[in-house]
Image 1 (cartoon, rainbow over the protein chains, first blue to last red):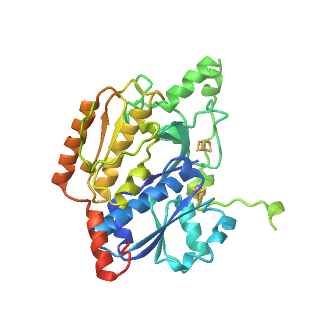
Image 2 (cartoon, rainbow over the protein chains, first blue to last red; image 1 turned 90 degrees about the vertical axis):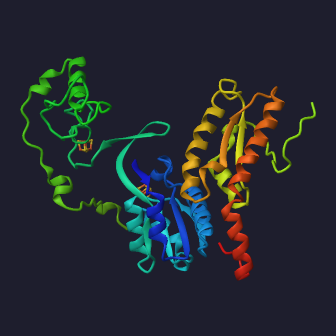
Length: 222
Length: 124
Ligand code: SF4
Ligand code: SF4
């Protein structure tokens, strides 16, 4: 899922400063699961904004709503009769949701309330970590299910590099060396031969290097 | 035991301090409370195992949210008292009340009342 972090409160407040009537809009999917932009976080942030603005004697109306997904046109439709009534919408969805909302309602000012950080997993309650960078050409079958693009700080394919020490990456001792993990698994499965194989350089044109990406399924189009 | 504590302290009963969510406390400040403290069981004695530990972590996080909001993190606290410690309960009530008195009223409440008077509308 997509992981995000709430923007610093002061940044949010200065973004909102010119606007009186505000909608704080949550999204029920990824950002709910990573506890940054669901109905609960919408209520908390809206309350904080009300408390702060009233304390600072700024006249304001702060409304709250959460929809199923901000990255899906059909769920954006339910806002069509109400969204025009606010001076600004503070979206707590990821960057996809913020943009898509603004594309659907071009007259509405949509502002980001979160910093979208990565695609990852919930390792445990309250801890999310990165797993995939969407390189467009997955190599997990060759790397024992551990992604060198994401989990190796240098994204190299011939690791470990000289900075790997006792299974840890040189960037910080809490970060496991991805290539150390990969090799441990090769060994465990008796598959070190795979490590020794020479492979051609990775084609990065399927990743961000090739520009914005799209996926189309004509059979699904209506 | 007839032990008195300040009448300004209003008790809201919950099954466990672990039930108290951040939004409940923020709403209480929006409702005009000047300070809020949680009184949970002693650490290690939670009937639900970790309810009071989770409440403690939430209070810590809530302090940052209240600082950001200009209400001030000092207006919330968490205490652990066993049900046999009536005196300690009353002491805490006094101690916390003193702290809040020294901080003065909730600034949100003050301005809300003023702006209602000034503009004839809710203000927020
Ligand atoms: S808008 Fe973003 S956070 Fe919401 S469901 Fe879509 S991808 Fe996930
Ligand atoms: S190899 Fe590419 S697609 Fe596969 S997990 Fe890594 S970044 Fe994601």
